Length: 504
Ligand code: ME8
View 1 (cartoon, protein in one colour):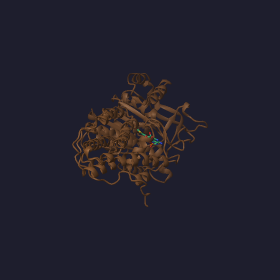
View 2 (spheres, rainbow, N blue to C red):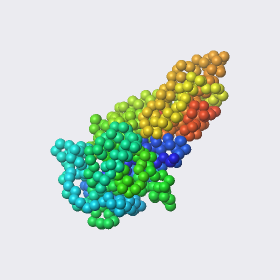
View 3 (cartoon, rainbow, N blue to C red):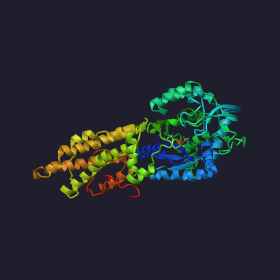
View 4 (cartoon, helix red, strand yellow):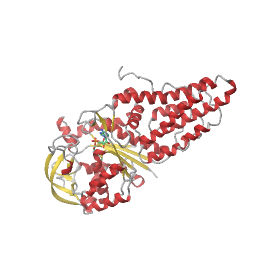
């Protein structure tokens, strides 16, 4: 079974921030883990370039939308490698192949009888590019996300017959309880469906910045339908000269935050049904990174700069922090102080010291050669079934729980060092065999957790495995005892304490 994972495509109305980095990092962890399982993996991210959010931001800067899109799409494209993301493709909705696919699929939806002409009247948030239902409006006709005043829109549009999918969507939710995860989000989506679905605009008449509607060039497609289709269109042109759709569709996981839940859990499956395209397996909805209690967002201006963090501490530290600090799927606060605390106490003290102590003792007591000794059964017991447990969590996108499983073993290895006190054994020549066993067990345990940590800490894990002379990354090699470390070599500190500030 191939594994196809996506992030939302991000608006190019401003530069990327930590919230965007978060979803991309999570998707990358899943992609890397599945590659470790030997599966064919495809990981997609990219940018959403049409619609009012981008057109308005461009005009405010005195630019054409395409100019702003070109400028910011490059920043998002550049973010991926900076955070260690191994995406297989980067889609831009202004790609001509994407636009052609949008026209093709939405014409099919019309041919299938789900499109009609009508007049839309209602409240609209130009930042969300969202037509708000009456029960989604804050006091004073404000957007609950952006806190700006909503506009009253009246427009001749083509409509998508969303209401026709009320029963099919209820059936989908009844049959596939893991279509939307976690459970709270499934309940939220289902209760939205149960309140009764109204038809929604499929096109915009007032806007010109969008994909032209082939049957009426006075209109462009409503940005959300254009954007959602990226997950499908990308496969048709991501690899030059190939169409990967048959091989990779449907997607295994769409990762999103809860701000765009309704589009992905209601509109998207309905649209696919209308076009007779298979539905994705899962939509996983993670929470918000909060700063000072509010959703971090560019329009609210309360953002933590991922580039500054990476510059000083490296991408691995940021990846680890985000997935360790905030239980994946829930909201959680982030701050510079909690970042520094975790970096120091967990990465530097727990993992970094474990690695340097293990390598240091092998060097000191055995000249860097790993003794050929049987593993300590007590340790083996604590590691039994670990790769399987990690895989079971990642299968459900429980990335924080998977990391916790691994981290418990990092702590276990540190306790093992304290319990066995190899420095005492080294002083008693008659206990050389015991020392052999402790050292061999320790280095094998370190190798095992490092293989499992690779999706979270790719650069550090590769460095450490190279120092252990055991670069194998496959998940089966993470089993304690599956590897063979013969010699270790010294490495510089993996997570140096108090790295210099950027530019210092
Ligand atoms: O909504 N906490 O784009 P967008 C966690 N173009 N995640 C966050 C976050 C935060 N504070 N802020 C942003 C759009 N995100 C549309 C999507 S998809 C077909 C079209 C992440 O630039 C999270 O993944 O506003 C959220 O869903 C996404 O960025 C919104 O990005």
